[in-house]
Length: 255
Image (cartoon, rainbow, N blue to C red):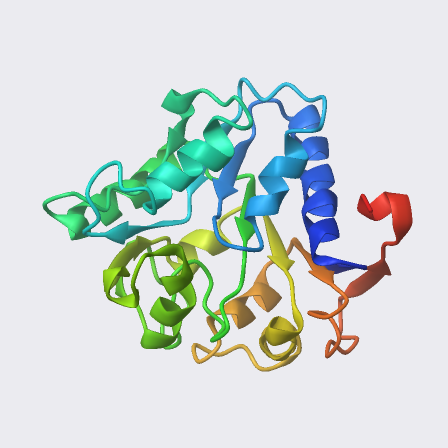
């Protein structure tokens, strides 16, 4: 595991984008696992500033709310369209999001899991981490070998996401999420974390026991993980076996 510590939250997006740009230059038809949320979204803005041809890149989103109508501004399909597909000028036909408006969401989840395999798997999966340690929408208690499925959102997660909706009651109760087992099949996991409020859970995930109580702790079992964290988020990290910490400053961090 390699850990890049950068001065500011904005710098995490710059460093992560540089990593992705290098991957795309070496593999123009790379398959990216797309995450949304406060930490991952700045990556795409920074990546758009790189002179790299992304016309052959494919994207597969981590998750989607269940029950929002097609075209809802806060559905992840719309967020991915606005923030990723259009910003990076990707081919819309090569970008997929779980079908949260499907009549049978359980079937849609299983089909999405199969679609990831049919795409040849994900080369780089972008990730954020929730305050309770969730990865994608794998809430505490999720099986470490879980597959893409329908999940019930915890109140803590719904409260965190309420800022994107007009009222807290509008936040959906369920979602379709890639499972932890599905995520672990990606070739490279790229975790981006910002803020002092994430310091405790990041330390638990990277330095604590691997347990379903902290889903993100499964990262410790993956052979290729890169963590990009600002100084506030990384403040409680301790050196661990197999971890390489690199402090990135100034121009190298894009600041």
